[in-house]
Image (cartoon, rainbow, N blue to C red; front, side, top):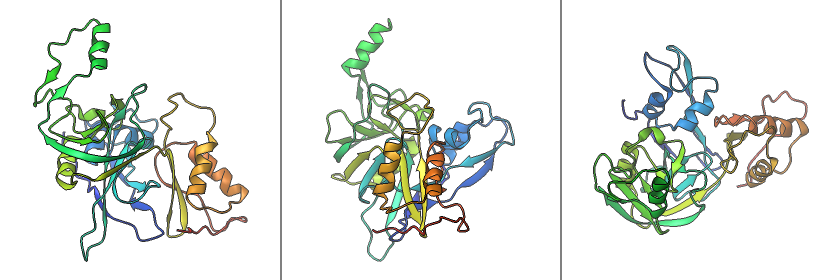
Length: 305
């Protein structure tokens, strides 16, 4: 499998704008899976499968046109250090600006904690960076294996291809919480870890090199992100991780919260219904809320920040 060719670095949008990148399209090649395409373009399994409903991720037909969700609404969080959005399963890094150069933002897909071992929301700092880390199996993991009738040969896994932390790790000031690589790249964009944040091997390598110790890390959970692009309001909707069951209707509480956080003062009835319809799709693709300036009740939406 080829490594990522998609540029993960963008110039930070100008004040009042919140979107990065552009949507792209590719066609499936012979014997190519959606996971192959995802890694090539630095996307996670969740992102590419949600953006392409109805496409078999393991056996997509050759020639199938695939949407690459490579456009992102920035999370509602201070644009400094590392910001992780759990619902999106994506990390954003805002390097300290270099004099006379535009500020950059680097973004990568991640794997997060599975149900029952969720990654905690909160504010942290990078305490240390480790190359070729060893991994000690937690007591909970050891006990789970014993319940399955499996007796682990060893609880301490040295650096190497069998190490689940990969080749690099960053330790946060929260006992046991790491940002690290993986020896299972297919797990990126899934809820599979015991709470840590996983990145593709090539992504953690570059991130460790760029991120200094002491960098703040903000972990948020925003399934519905709202942002502006040239005074047009967009919504990017993801399946909330708090409920893995398919719902018959949209939970409007985080949708309303997202609208309020975006600074929207008022919406017409057609605009609000449009928001609810878009939120219920959970495609992860940013969509404009105002579809046509010819609508009778359109309100020109502007940001107050």
